Amino acid sequence: MTNTAAQGSPLAPEWLAVPDDLNKLHEPMWAKDVARNAEGELSIDGIPVSELQRQYGTPLFVMSENDFRARARAFSDAFNDAFADVCGGVDVYYAGKSFLCTSVVRWVEEEGLRLDTASGGELAVAYRAGIPGADVALHGNNKSDGEIHRALDMGLGRIVVDSLAELQRVGSIAEARGEQAKVMLRLTPGVHAHTHEFIATAHEDQKFGLSMAADTTDEAGISAAEEAVAAASAHPGIELLGLHCHIGSQIFEPDGFALAAEKLLRFLAAMQEKYSITLPELDLGGGYGIAYTPVDTPRPAAEIATAMAAVVRSTCAELGIDAPRISIEPGRAIVGSTTFTLYEVGTLKTVRVDAPAASGDGDADNNVTYPRRYVSVDGGMSDNARPVLYDADYSAVLASRASNAAPQLSRVVGKHCESGDIVVRDVYLPEDVAAGDLLAVPGTGAYCWALSSNYNYLARPGVVAVRDGSARLIVRGETEEDLLNRDMGA
Image (cartoon, rainbow, N blue to C red; front, top):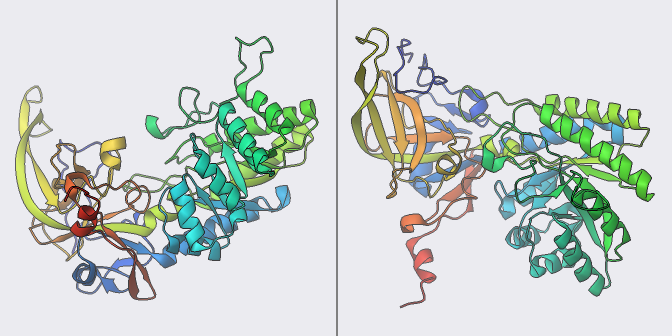
């Protein structure tokens, strides 16, 4: 079952090595109960992927419920342990925008976590699932009046306010209802997260949050963040709980989280002293990275928690303040690796691509053509938009069988009418991959189904959850009838 290591293709990115064994699974990318069975077929909790295809078709999102629950518990346990002597523990909010359905909300509640939402639709899922409103947060930079009313109707534990204008809107609606909205202020601490530009959210030039930088055009010279603290503290429709930040997504190093925590604690202390108020809570957001490829190095929850707790502990001691209650918002780090997407291979073709000659291929000053194989599958950018949106890298394995064939540089592509419809840009797959084979792409639990679309009128795939050797649909796949039912022309 082992391939002899081969020289990589000059067309491959530098980070992509030729696997010694194309049948071996790189464990950090997969749920704990995914393995190859005795016949070499990929299975999850003992169920072979061919059986899942037979029952539910492809494409298909396949999720391990046990793995989801274990990762949720790991975050809760690690952060509660690390912060026990700092603030008595941590409130862990699962970031529902990564993937949400009623089953997931129930798992979150049963594992002792809370829920973070970002729209009225996500609130509707939370309400249907029956989670107490006090355990739910609402984000968003442009909440509608209807969403604010729904949040108040549900008795949400926090509304995270993103701007001065929104603060006034939330406060006015709550006051008119004779209520107080529980509010946290989202600040932009100016911490640079080493991630894609579109998912770095703590720098000044973007739509989220209240700037902590002093406004030099204003006579008072105070920041938008300070102005919001003063306004919220004085508003009869607002109960100001504390501060919030989120520095970005898919971040591997804890340094950025620690720096953001320090900056917000210093700001919190200054506001408490200046305005004689207590800000009892501090939310440090999420954004913890996962392994999409063999070179990704996610940090264990305990390592992140320990680093952040050390900064909060020492900074509060230096400032002479009581530590606020800390909360965090992991989403991708809980759900991402619990899920793989199962596809069936269709057409294959190999093209020749010009590239500088590799060692041993002739004159290095001249270009040589090298083969790149395109492997088309029955899904694509409609079920995983991240490669085209963020240049995100993924991996893939031959799932329906093992293979002793030589590795061949491949590009897994979808069936949409777009040249950018790429599922996995570069991966070594066995050269005997053929039509009808099944491929599995790991790490698709977060922001894949959630970003899915009906482009080219493809129906969105279903989501199957597996637990204790049994599979069940938790999100039904769409049918053509579902799509046509919204067309009002006939």
